[in-house]
Length: 276
Length: 268
Image 1 (cartoon, one colour):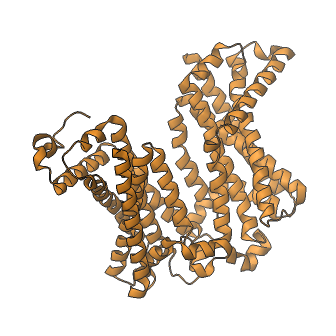
Image 2 (tube, rainbow over the protein chains, first blue to last red; image 1 turned 90 degrees about the vertical axis):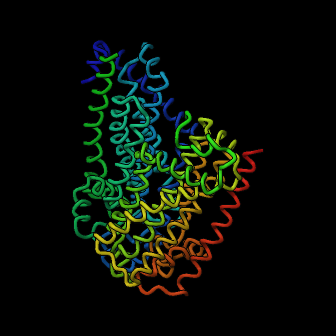
Image 3 (cartoon, rainbow over the protein chains, first blue to last red; image 1 turned 45 degrees about the vertical axis):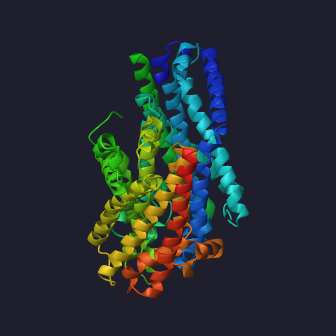
């Protein structure tokens, strides 16, 4: 779609498609290395989710005495908290990855990329793929820490893999949305200012506490909040046997958001290119 | 910043700069900053209210199942303290800005004692604390919070919130004088965040387990929260108050000492 807008000749041959992949791969590598070289920026997306999960499991462990909770939701609050921590970590990391793209624009690196003979689309795709790689790495580390702390994944290695892929897809969706915002605004401050909105969406969902125990308008908001459904898909991988509804919630829902968001990001890129 | 009528006493009559006069002018200047840059202050007003709604909505069941009538009774004092401390830390953002623009060096030239440079931001912090605390309490009342302790309940929450706000501000000042960049305010915010959450912020000690229970028992914030909450859960008693008052007094003493030694280091 936008590939044609940004570079009409790019998709016409297999060679061009190969160069798109090559350029995306190099920029993905740059994005991942950039993340790993800034531990101070990536650390909060590890520390806070793990802290909240530890805090929740030490504070709300009595919820596991409720038969409804143990039968329908999770065997322990630690098991319940895993999905919320994964979601939180991936969302935080995705926002800071998009902020990096905005910093590239602010510092002029983006202009230098445009001046070089590389595919325009790979500038966005490289960043998104980098974000997905970091998310997969992050989810794997989270799961290993939780398993070490006593959590159990009921659906076994498939559930583990399901969650890692789900985390990557969510990262793709959120990074693309934020990358669109970064390209459109060209300001890391604007991208960072989206953080409170994500924070609000996360709290108004079942990321930290089951919807079953909420009431009133709060419950209604949580019911309609897509984050609730994504996180419940993640929880399904950990606390239940595998079934289609988990894949629909944890994979297809983020994928649908990702498709719309990638379109938005590429459109923003086209507009920026047209403007420059 | 160019010369302005904000500092008439300092600029026109250096010999007459009495400590209270300087404090008053610096507080007025801090308030002017709030008026001119509301975007820097508004988050400290909105976030505690949002957290109050989020905590009572999400964790309400966990709290009410422990015998607490209304989740707001449990979370209003917590969020008042949190709002006050984050509001107070905002003062250090102003100080950092003054340091970066060189204005603070000019203030240091004023013929006044160094403790005034700590007392003035602390006085400004009190004003910055009161607004979010009042906002949280109003939202609590609108949401149907109970105050069986009557007016004393509000007094206790105000003392706790302003006390912790002052501690946070003094600690932030001490750190700002030492490292002289925005990292000081961020580090203070992290410190407040972890101190608050590693106490009885979410549930009472009796409902906790493992490491959190051990940490919360020795965390002074647990006593402060007990002081703040008692009037919302029952009557206000000396037994429920002295631990919190003592914790605030000790923390305030330590953090003010940290700020004073910080400004001395800054001078050197």
